[in-house]
Image 1 (cartoon, helix red, strand yellow):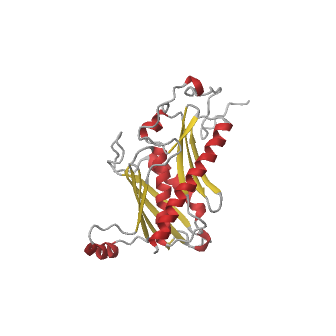
Image 2 (image 1 turned 180 degrees about the vertical axis):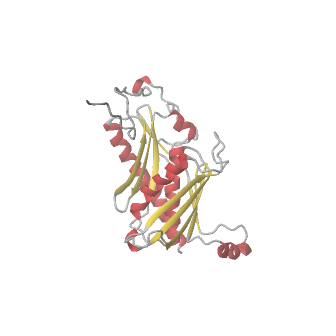
Image 3 (image 1 turned 120 degrees about the vertical axis):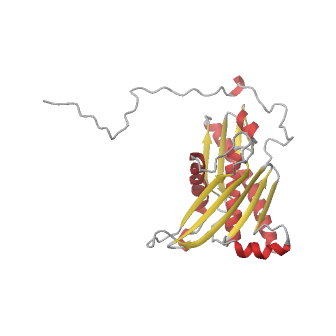
Length: 272
């Protein structure tokens, strides 16, 4: 006699699914940028960028003590508008797997407790910080020559001092890691530059601040290697048409090329 056997190790999904409800798009939604942006930037303009690599010492006398105390192979400070991020790269050093033919790249992303104006962060690492750490690893790892570092690991520790837009903060973290890897002398195919965009009505807006990101119907982040003409990572939240997606990719890669030029210009000047 047959009996009903239930596999309790599986998660039984619902018998029917319902299409999610999205916010209104197109003419039905109000355009929050009809009168321009709050900081008077153009829709395709990125906020001013400041980059500093190496140890940050307040006084020349403290520089030697700070350099000897820090074991980081490379450090970078990245500022884009109100976003402020620091990154420290350690390695290449002994990896966890002794038989690995290629090295590994790990990232630790954390918000400072006072980084977000809308929420005070806990000192305990949250689920969103772990998710962003994986995003940074997948975005930056394709640019590193990991096969040149067998049995080794490269670790990047990113701290967000001030945030202004989640997607823009992730993009700034990718740019900061690229500068820190270059300061550490890590062999790379190319530097990774990232930029984010938000969809407002029928127009894409580059480098959205937090109020602009809250008003946008969709957000997209692209990590791009301009020298190799290769996209390493795409992150999108929201619903778009194929035409809107293609427009966003084209515009975002152009913005990444501009950010890439700023990073390369600074790295070249730091060697002089």
